[in-house]
Image 1 (cartoon, rainbow, N blue to C red):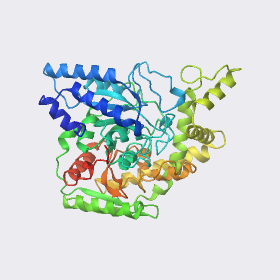
Image 2: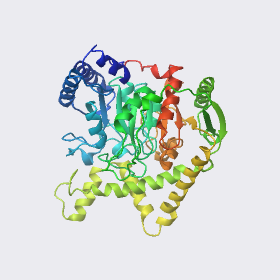
Image 3: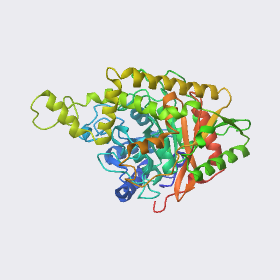
Image 4: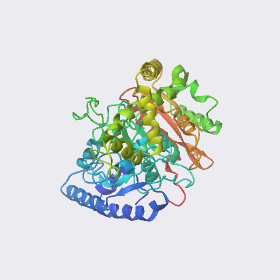
Amino acid sequence: MHHMTLAEIARGLADKKFSSEELTQVLLARIAQLDPQLNSFISLTPELALSQAKAADARRANGESGALLGAPIAHKDLFCTQGIRTSCGSKMLDNFKAPYDATVVAKLAAAGGVTLGKTNMDEFAMGSANESSYYGAVKNPWNLEHVPGGSSGGSAAAVAARLLPAATATDTGGSIRQPAAFTNLTGLKPTYGRVSRWGMIAYASSLDQGGPLARTAEDCALLLQGMAGFDPNDSTSIDEPVPDYSASLNGSLQGLRIGVPKEYFGAGLDPRIADLIHNSIKELEKLGAVVKEISLPNMQHAIPAYYVIAPAEASSNLSRFDGVRFGHRCENPENLIDLYKRSRGEGFGAEVQRRIMVGAYALSAGYYDAYYLKAQKIRRLVKNDFMAAFNEVDIILGPTTPNPAWKLGAKNSDPVAAYLEDVYTITANLAGLPGLSMPAGFVDGLPVGVQLLAPYFQEGRLLNVAHQYQQNTDWHTRTPTGF
């Protein structure tokens, strides 16, 4: 049962081949058996899961149907879940139980999703390796000595190891797409504003976006259908109709114009990954797509711009964690300043402290214009490059990451080396565009992903291309040994 996709589970439940309660019990037992070697979960919710599964079975018995009704999922541990610890992977929120459900959690619960638990993540979503978590590093099921990517590494590792069929995740600079690439999954970052951020604990508010992680494009379509939509509680949510993402999966790719940026194939890209990307281009050409070289001239400035904007927003967002209202509070503070200093010093890990300090510096008097304002101008140039490119092509294709997953601890002494691994993903967040990573092969036994980018609100186009590619390749069906 654990090898079934979300779509297969939906058909099995509809045909009464098994119940949601039976499936939930199988997966909970599998998590208990296998997760100790992965560390992909922070909290398990077996009682909630079984009660939701029983309720889903009852709804089906009463004639209800739905792709997510009775489907087991998990939530990245920055989506607030009422009465359940929502830690953001941090000591700061180790004792925090959210008093309400995030909109994404509430929507998926209403659709009948069964919550198995909360998945591990880089602390406050800051990281590319899932090594900054207060609860320890997550291991990549393809090789337990390697990272699964971050910050949504817990969701990715759990789905890749067949502990569950799909999970929610978030993407601020590639945190859905990069773990998807490292673990042989399909991961989708929707257009900024397509999925509500209400109840999703913020890292960088103008960049964060929730989305699905699953094994196939078909499953991502089902999960995104349940997550997407306008939310009046979120001022950045866009009131745009949500299409039926599954309906467009089987559209023809004949005449599809694919742009391949020449900047993607520079010195930093592993040549073996470049070969796999070119192979995926050939597969899409067989399906009728037309490939054209394009240019994104300001891509080289994206990383420095991102690592000014994101920390600046983080320094503002994380100022609420001060030991006063909720979260970690130091013992016996001498005064208010001591309370702030020690609570934040004890509650935040090294990477979070580093980014808060960078962000506070960039926003400080005398440096705002030199750093933050300039970074925002570069952001606009990056967006303009994409708008010009999409006048010529329908989607943009390239590698998701320049290298396969690295060994645990290999980049801990050099944070900038880890930042550079985001070179292909962060531009979509700066511009607010939808992006998808899908499996494209292996290098030294480690998965490689190919990234697709599309114009605003064209998630259906990305899912269509990925689904057609997956109908003609079998990379996404490969399973890590031992799982």
